[in-house]
Image (cartoon, rainbow, N blue to C red; front, side):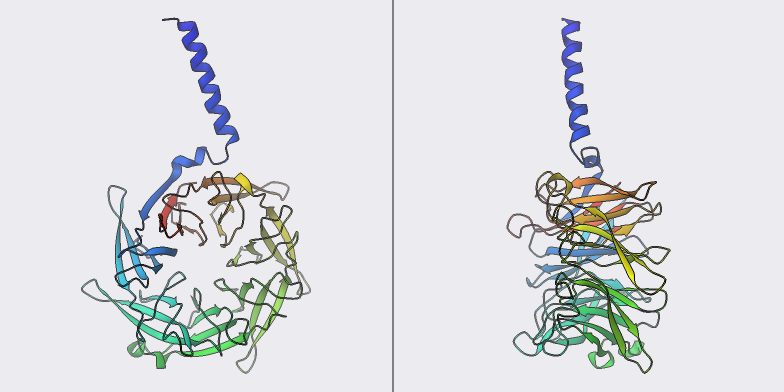
Length: 414
């Protein structure tokens, strides 16, 4: 054997690998990506929304379609000792007056361990368009579903999106456009524990109705500040036409006041935000917008409150499209070191979206790193917000194309 020739060839091959790892974004991160479950589009569900943890480390979510009757499902993923996960359908929607169909948002737990979510359509064809439901665990391991509220297309808008609780057990959320309404912010007032399954014991109050000038189509989950004010985003409308970030403040007498704290232009400051917001410890807000920025492919932004009540926006990162990612549609999440993580629904090495990390620099800038580029199979187009476990691992979902791929739940170790 010609060892000099062998060493020369091996050395050249090693250099090629090194060059690939340096210049291909996310190459190092590919080994840290793991698919926990691939949906088949059948009885197990299709097109999942985001996931949420329980105290035991199980994941829960919804699928828009599929399930036993084809109208969507609620599922659980349980970790096994060997590192695999077991999927179980807790409930399949039947498209009746009792349960509706097509849940299109994530779930939230109450303090008692019940799961709450929203459905796109109940009694379709009448004024009832959308609803909220609760899943209650039974001693035998089964779960009982009950509809707790109906949303009227004319009065509150529809369909409803993901919800949050306040300390008193009341639920808050948003609806998108309806008849003569550009969306709303609502409250569901809790009933007694013995009557939680009855819709009449949950009172629906619309806190604010949008009218385009103050924003239109709020599609994201709300967030509370320490004073009990609600914050969210609208994807359209507002003073500059690109949607806005809004605050809804409780007033004396029980009314609520809406204020736009930033109006997007759709230009370099971003626009078309469908993302939920998060606070840092200093009271600053962070989020994403799916269009605009320096390159037109969306931004990650920060809003800082001023001493006189105004808010100042700063673009932390402009997505470039291509391998860098494009169209961030979901919110951000912090790790304990102050890094931000999120997803972009398009772009990446294969055009099917990315998971990214934003790291703050010493001089105030932020640097993006692509952790994973989706390949189209088994999942593509991530649009739900990521969740972190106690070890700092990230979990999320992909939608799939609905033909050959039907979505997945994944884990990434940064």
